[in-house]
Length: 586
Image (tube, rainbow, N blue to C red; front, top):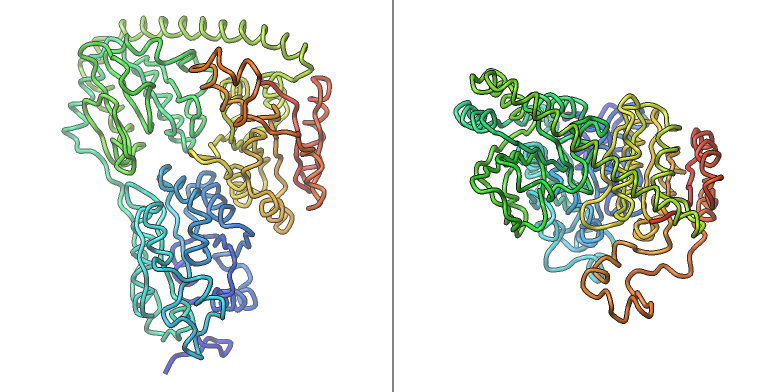
């Protein structure tokens, strides 16, 4: 006979799911609701009654994109995976853009999605009349998730549940990391689970090992680097933790190599006030490098067929180099180092520092440092000179130049603030002017990967795990229109997650005009002008939207408004979310 709980109820599949999540220390289950989750909700209700502080905590998300993106933000800000519930195959499809982001950014998470095997023909496990006509199809959640997850599986009996949950969590955290899906039929959730089926009796917690390159390979690659005359480092998303950022700083200074970031970086990977932070366009100096070290980057340079210096050696360091989840990797590559990038770079640095070649080249390394220091200083001066011209044009157009707003935001934000971005046109100013004071120790993470609409939810996921920190989401007005605004604002209101949302409002999709200028500079679109893919007209009054969720909106019209608006936002965001609608260029 099944064993009752101490309160007299029997354990069901929902209890089993929560047992396993708690066993792995998963703090939150971000859930987009559906009636078929009733067994899981009942399990949560029992825990809330008997153990209100137990994990995981339930987070009610009003949109699938919000649920997955919040889990991404939680992981990016803590390094701890979260779990997600999506409502059957339809919910998986609706959240698939964020799942794709998690897969491409190698973010571990467990997704659970209900389905049915009896289609309402069993009195004891009927998920509802909507299932046969509306919710089922020939695929089901696991198959729908196959293209956007690392691994997916469909449970068919109660005996499948524990093993598949343990396998999924293990696979998600194993290099290369990524999201995984377990389809759990309503019939399995409704089943009774005997005491001997507890996860402690069936499986211990399975810990993923840290995969690293062999000592021999690291030794060989260290010789290439130590012998280099002009090495360059390129990264997109290595700086996912303070440890990684500090390590990259040590590595760059050890070999006096500049660190160039892709123009929409995944993190603030390197001290952007450092003399070794690469300024200007990478492609303008790429042909001078004899060794290129590409660390955690999906596309190190553009175009991919750019001609490198004859004999240049390209070292790709990544969890899984050459992008096995992508249709393309056309970048010249000499050697790959796979496995945990932080562990591998740490070991590679130790090998380089102890090599005889490195030690005898100390004077060359010092000269190289000075050369790059001067180069980056010149590039920074050129950037500033160009900015001054643009600021005059912005003033003439009654606009706030993005760089000025970012400078003042950086000055006023408290140390350790978390900054999430989702924009394109303002990125050069964002990466430079918001991160010039290393003492502020801002934590930065990109809120999107390819598809727009995830930034605010990523920020909310970061906030739920860091309630004592200021969290700011900076996004373009185009990106704002893609985000599930009612669901995001509802989550902020319901759970008391007061973030600051900055809408960089240039009244359109400026980045979508770039190919007009590139390919049709004298064409009808620019001469008319008629830019059908770039307009957001009429311009909404974004600052009026938050009030419906007890948030606060502020329109920032002119340069004179900026300082006071940021200060007000910081004060108000102690208790409610705030939206700044900033009249910017570009």
